[in-house]
Length: 361
Image (cartoon, rainbow, N blue to C red; front, side, top):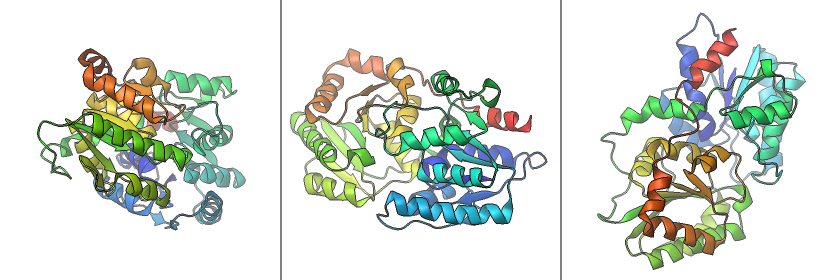
């Protein structure tokens, strides 16, 4: 049973689902959607032409982590009782993933974890994802870390080597699968010729409140300083994000606030971008494929590979630091070239095949 609830989970699970569907003699697959993110999940199902066998439809606007966790636990446990899977496979660090792993443990069902071993060492950054990953790591029988760094993290925590297969990140598989759809796909927004596009994503829980205000102020300062810069910001539907962004950035010159884009639209915009300003985990992995520098608006990242490779840089949420680093990339061609020409350190596009081969054995 493969479980997914959010857009990022489905993007990274889709290659595994598609690989298993090619091998029905080896894998009897059941897809379970919690729909932790309803609209954004539905977009991805359409793009990858997937249909879950069961959809729990648990999304409630602005629900707390306690409410979400309780709903996932109760409803997923009911499905486990009915279906009795041999292995439950989850991805990443969402509440859907962590609670599903816990529910599987209660039923004594083996857990396989895609994108295992990412760590920051700070339980509140990212929140609640750092603890979600650690809990899953304790419960899982099979671990698929994307890089050598994440593999080493698992070994240091006492996970046995025979339980681990380093695979690369399935997001690279996903990008390869749908990259052909980007050519000729209409841009979701008409861009101004000759402007440098900065594409923004900011939605993390630990950035709610004052950090989000700082991010918005930094964006204003960037557009005030550089008249040849245009900002496009697809705004996450969470009210904590919507309130701050609309308060500070609505109807400002050269700042386009968009509704959330579907994945193809977002990748089209990423290909057009000069650089990325983001607090997202997935963007840190996707942007290097398109050779786009990423300034990471977080205090820590569980994806140090991009930092080490020089394709991304931690800038936090201090507005002056964000402005300083954007200025460096806009004004210094050499600095920009160094960040944009690095190879993607997150994989080669064969992760799903490696995962299925490991499980077959």
